[in-house]
Image (cartoon, rainbow, N blue to C red):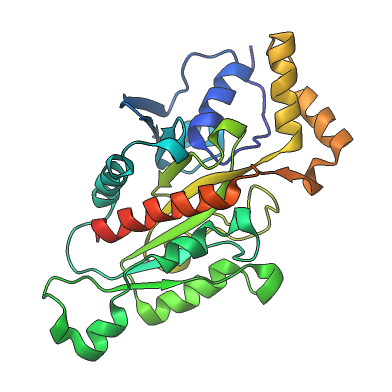
Length: 294
């Protein structure tokens, strides 16, 4: 039986793996390894895309995709446990030392579901200017950290990757950490999951799909992306509801496309009514994790 092609409506690697296995009636995917860790209040799923077969299956680049999933982020008893674990993974991806780091907050700061990146950047402890002007007040092992919010192409007329590439030539970072809002296929995951990856990111790919990849080729630095799903499209919610009612997975992709066309889903993206609070909580967790990892 030939494998069916599937059009993904999520940026989350673990969701794409689950969807691919359901659509193609598979229990595993060649070239993809999955590991799960469960804690009292959150779960971590690590997706390792090992080869081109795995990359083609879920339309993700070869590399690591680590997802934190919290049951209810607003009522999490101890956020520090999440921060510590997120910091641990960041330290695995960033060699400890004094190598320069550039933190980039992607998205549109004037649109709440897309403002995660700018909120995180506000909480980053930047040191580059201090090290250049009065480094005597900092410890000898202080890492050079800088941060920017390049905005969106609709406001600047410039692709985000072009801005970051140009700044990277001046700052010359060893690592670039990009933070962005993502799309999920589950409303339950919006504002309550975090995905880390070492493969770069294409800003706005979930909605516009016209931006250029931000990766090692465009920045000349190792790129680590941190994203939080902040939106779900209407067709996904409708399709999920029908799945529960009908209790079947047959022709799910075909039905999604019909729903998307009837709802004009490109113009309607759904986000929770408490998105402001979720953005604040998640930006605080991510900025603290980055600061502590540095």
